[in-house]
Image 1 (cartoon, one colour):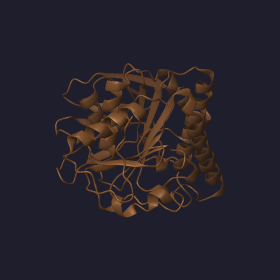
Image 2: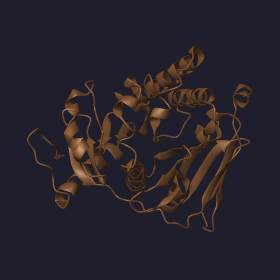
Image 3: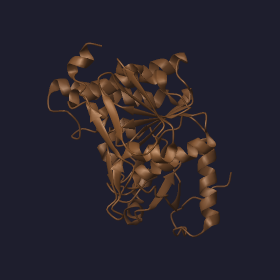
Image 4: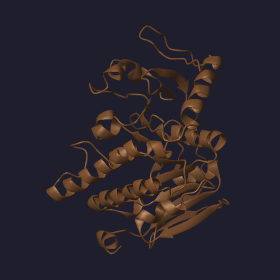
Length: 321
């Protein structure tokens, strides 16, 4: 398929060139959305619309890859748009735009939706974190809510290591639904680079290293099984290096800054820096980049309700499983 890419001497493609935008979209749907097992990392500073891009991807999957199970990891993130004054919780936005969801959480922990809206929610509680994958099916958008219930960084890292270790184990045996996309916002909180994680003592550093290596293994081994990761991070250097280099597709947003381990992209740092907040580029596996194009804005209505997290998951809970 013919592609539209930037070369060194190209001028920015105008956003009102609909033919060009349509060509980029068609290419992205064919090469990425319809091809399971390809990982994507979106980069950009806070307030650049990274989460809105994730919402757009869900729309594309639901339309063009309906058999792919979508697993959104809830990090308890509140949303606020400084330009529109809109605010809310990600779970409420997912419910509003994408309909039926399945909220999977731990026994003794509850996600309470306080709202006058008639949301279609199926709740699942699991005794052991590694059992979440059993319930991730394509009939609903799956929301895994574990992060908001774990207050201790060491417990958080060790629980995620168990979850992702189990994912590889199940995938290698064909005991999990495929294709499957894991969507994890702010992945630098899971596998940070040195200086950005829980390295305050030897034990914590060992657990963080295990989590980082487990995530790297996932990215490398799951491609051929039809399982992919779609993640975001604030900056390239916040993410553990072997992990960030394992994403084939990249989506730079405003103020993205690449370093010398990605020299072909680092020379375009002035381009990423000056783009508008609503713009994005797509870096394809071959290294060229498409765009810029205007990202959709998923408005957050003020009457969606509220989300309450009730319960705490501790180290003792984990050790008793």
